Length: 404
Image (cartoon, rainbow, N blue to C red; front, top):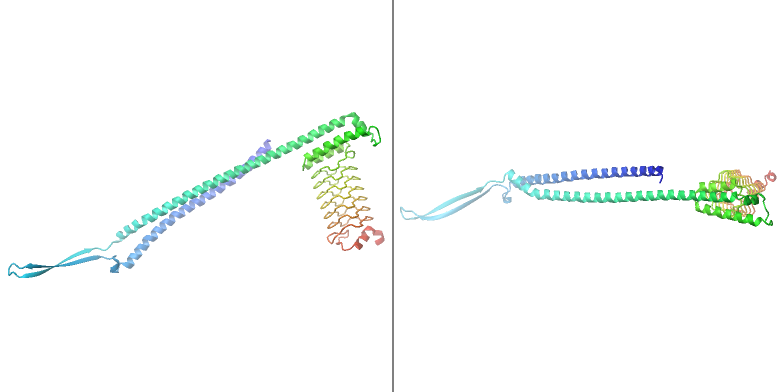
């Protein structure tokens, strides 16, 4: 891993950790506030109990049956005694009074305090239990979040390492390809045969064909290994262009998805059934190239030179062909649905049986174009900006001189 990659990764890790710490501090402050509120709540409940007891006492004090007021107990005892003077029996009545004062405020406060102690202890115990549970839940959450963060960091590290490994692998594959192809090009015999433009009937053509097949196999192999690496795929094709092999190699079925080929010269190249999905071919020279059955879905072909190119059966759905030169091009059976052909030159182009549904042909040149059995729909935009309604509309664009 390079220093730059490590620095970028460390910055991301530090930022994530800082956000997590802020979140923990915020949760902790909420927990502290909740504890303070629980304690205050317990005190308020206790005070309410005392006040309620006093109020009840005041209400019930005047009622004797409640026992809240003063209590008195009078007992009367009658005794018979003999009067020593005359011997008569005398009845003596003894009255004894046993009184108990009423409960004072302090007595009732003591009772209320005695009753409040279990309530306060219960509330305190409950509060402590809740705090313990909350601390345990918070610690568990923090552990889980740390584990998730570590897992995410590990995943990011692994992804970064895979990306670096993939980049190194592709760079190595490209270097090996160029080295091996350079060895082939240095061979004087191959160079001599290549410069002679031999016909198939020539005795030495088999030697040239064998060398070109080796070059083709190596090229197709490295393009597959580069997958969607558009920049390095572009480097492979530009190497072939510089080596003057692009028009001599058969690159049928080549995978050039997402390739960067701006302004590249692929004149007379054989790229039958090649894949150009999302490729950038802006302003490229594709004159007389063979693209039979090739796929250009969503590719950028703006301002390209496709004069006389063979695009028979090619898929150009959603491709950008604005201002492209398609004069004399063969687009028979081509699929151009939703393609952008604004300002394109389609003069004398063969569009027989082509699919032009929802295609933008605004300001396109259709002079002498062949549109027999071509499929258009109400979403197809014609050169004058109108929507397609009937085949009769096409006549003035195909034969503008006659229409005028």
